[in-house]
Amino acid sequence: MDIKTEAEQARLASIKLASTSTEERNRALIAIAGALKEEAASIDAANKADLDAAESSGLATPLLKRLKFDDAKRIDCVDGIESLVSITDPLGVVHKRTELYPGLELTRVACPIGVVGIIFESRPDALVQISTLSLKSGNGCLLKGGSEARHTNRRLFEIISEAASSAGMPDGWIQLLETRDDVSAMLELDEYIDLLIPRGSNEFVRYIMDNTRISVMGHADGICHVYIDKELNIDMALNIVEDSKCQYPAVCNAVETLLVHKDIAKDFLPDMRKRLHMGRGVELRGCERTCAIIECLPAEESDWKEEYLDTILAIKIVDSIEEAITHINRYGSGHTDAIVTSNEKAAEVFLNTVDSADVFWNCSTRFADGFRFGLGAEVGISTSKLHARGPVGLDGMMSYKWQLRGSGQTVAPFADGHMKFTHVEKDL
Image 1 (cartoon, rainbow, N blue to C red):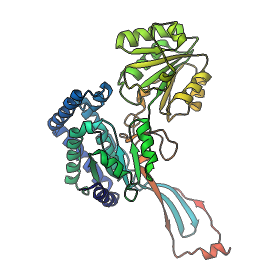
Image 2 (image 1 turned 135 degrees about the vertical axis):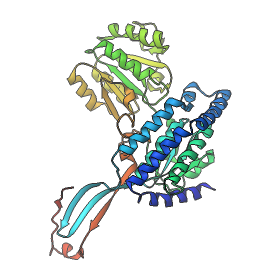
Image 3 (image 1 turned 90 degrees about the vertical axis):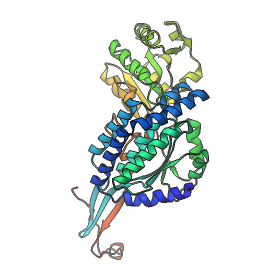
Image 4 (image 1 turned 45 degrees about the vertical axis):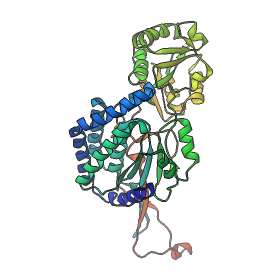
C-alpha cells in the first residue's frame, strides 16, 4: 500500500473516529494498555533486535538510551494511557455560547484536528504516547519513526492497531510509515494531512517547515538552563541541578547550561563539582571565571548553543539576574528554563521575562512533560507561540468549529438595519 492510500484511509477513519463516544475510545485505550502488558515478551524481543543492530552500527550513546524500551518505559506508557482514560473527553466541549439574536445561537465547540503526521526520533515510547493521544482526541495519525527502531515500532504498531480494532475503533486510523522516502511523500499530502509534528534536530525541523504546505508544530533543540540566584538554599539548588542534568540526560528537557550568580559562585560551584563531576561523572565546561574557581574544561562560545543530550554541562558565571535572562533569551531554544532562588521578587521577574514555553521556579527542568503536567501524555513539546506551546497533550491535538443554530433568520434584515444583533453571552 502506498503512502497516499494510507493517508486517505487515515482521513476516512478520522471522520468516523471523531463521532465515537467517550466510552468507546476509553474502552479502546484500556484494551491497548492491557495488550502492552500481555505482549511484554514480544516487545522485548523486537527491541533487542533493534538495540543489537544499533550497537553494531555504532549508534551514539544518547540515541541508544532513547531506543531502549525496557520494563520501566513500558510501565510509564501504560500509566500514561490509564491517565488518559481518566481525563475528561475534549471532544464536543463548548468553549463559548453567544446569542446573536433571539432564536439564533452561536457556539464554539472543540473538535479534532483531523489527521496528524508525526515524524519522531529513536524513541519507541513516543509511538505509544502519540497514537494513544490521537485516539483519545479523535485524530487519525501517520507515524514515521527512526529506522533504528524499526522492529520495536512495528511490533508496537501491530499491538495498538489490533487492540483498538478489537475494541471497535475504525480500521486505518493509525498508519505506520517505515521508509525515508515516506517522509518526502508525506510533505506533499496536504489534501489529507492537517498537521505535521517533527521531532528531531533543528536542521531536520527546518527542512520540514521549508518543504511542505502543511502546518508544522514542534520544537528543534532543547537548550535548557538552570539559573542559580545569589539568594538560595544551596542543598536544594544542588538537588535540582543534579536531577535536571542526571535523571535522564538524553532528553530535550535536561539542563544543558548552568548560570550562576557571581555572589554565590565560590560557595556553590565546588559543591556542585563534587556532586555532578565526581559523584555522577558529568563533564563540566566553564567560562573563564568558572575555571578560576573549580577545575573544569574551558567553555567555547559554541557550548552556549549546544544540546548535548549527554552527561556534559556548560557553566557560566553572571553578574545579575538580568544578565542571566538576557543569556537565556539569546542562546536558549525557548523550551524549559528554571531559576533557583529564595527571593520571590527575583523569581517573578524570571518567570515573566524568560521567553520560553516552560519557566520554572525552584524545581527541576525534567518536570516539562505532558504526563507530569497531567495532560495524560504528550505528542511533543512546542516552542512556537501559535496553537499550542509547551508539552502538547490533548488540548494541543484539538481545534474548534463554530456552530450556528437558527430558526429561519437571514442576513438581509441585519444588513439594512431593520434588525440588530444582541450578542448576549450565555452560560455554558
